Image (cartoon, rainbow, N blue to C red; front, side):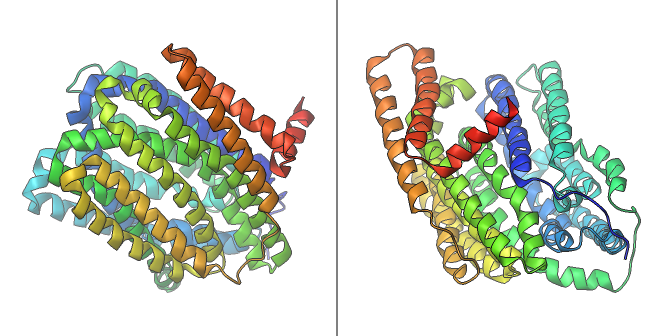
Length: 483
């Protein structure tokens, strides 16, 4: 057995790196999105997002659940280079087959569905993401927890996309350029992935009977991804069909902010998935329990002030990001802020189930949520429009949380978290009181927003320290060491 003598990555450092990547993914859209919304306006922005939502289904067919399956299975034997290289070769071969199949289905649907013909150009542009996602082999970097490379590559592509955005998106009709630049930002860096991956594995194709074994297991992840995509994207599709491009554009602004903030928090969760799979594979239950407990505590400290903060500054955020013409997006954003809470907690439960090889239970939760999501959309869109779709997402996320949370019983033994919850609760109250005082006493827009965000955040941290919140104190000590 040939082993890779690699130092075990530091979870806290990876969490910081992934958070930096997420912060940068928030900062760059905050620079470009206000510009894009004012140039393209709601209708053209809606066209781009509608095309993106349609193409996402074909991307799922190409991936076929292999990303999640590979990250879980490969993490267990990542130190065995020969075994891992064979595993990756088989998965890449299978992924290329599913990619070809996805393109065939995409071509047939595009020709046979007349309502998609006006979006042909946009759909073809977004279809490039399918092959580049396959060649990117992002799951290899997840297996090895190589978040330094991922972070540097991501920042480089964001800088390039920022430059291209201001060069080529200059007119209301430049939405094709906007779509193309989105593709570059999303998968352009995968070219470097394909070259850099040789650091970890011998890159080759391998078509054998093991492909069908991988296919059998990945199908469960695929079905779960389809169900999850339905309750994430079907709202855009239904909203576009029932209320038009303007409503989709209004929702797109709220969704953009929702996704940016959610990605920052979920960055902490993502870096632990491979480590939890490693602990499970090697029967290290104590380490598994401790890591899950620390993850939940960290997420609680980050999550609750974010949810409350969004509600306190929703109007200001919409004005900055999209302008006063998108004020109808405010209520959708407030709905979605609650969805962040349910979504992150549900993701933790899902992570526990998947690393415990209970993915069929995750599938049940996501299918249930997808069904509920479609029903709520059909009921609410006619009289709530974009707010109805936002509400449907919130309800779907809550359904996933309830089902997945109940299924986790007996899989992990959590450490005491009541002290963390109490200190967070008190700190959030203090932050809210401060922000409400600012709201009533300050009328200057920029000053009011800065005081709410910076001052409210400072108040929150101070009360965490006063309450001796263990997570806050740990990160403060870590910052001191870097000085």
